Image (cartoon, rainbow, N blue to C red; front, side, top):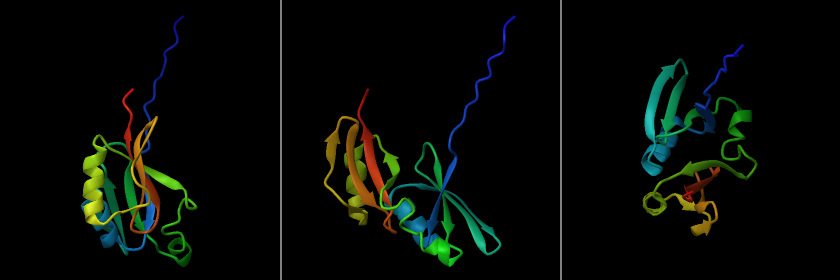
Length: 135
């Protein structure tokens, strides 16, 4: 007797990022990092704002709605790199982001896993810009 093997395909669809202001966050992620604005829908006194780098998970930009949430803007991962933006052309994206004014915390470096540099978003959250090494 054969058993059916069920294969489930799962992925992370959205990651919430608490922001100070919807419009300034949209400008940074779309104009600064080159993301696409996927949705911007009103929901009463809030908005459903989704931006995407074009592959993998997207970001749900959630404007802080309490003092407790506002206190976490910019420090959602305790000062660690919490987000990883993969690219197929590090130099292109690094140059474009630098021209926009994105603050890189280090010079680009080559590691065994790829070319990488840490940058901060407009609130101080730390990100890696990473071009993975070819296998």
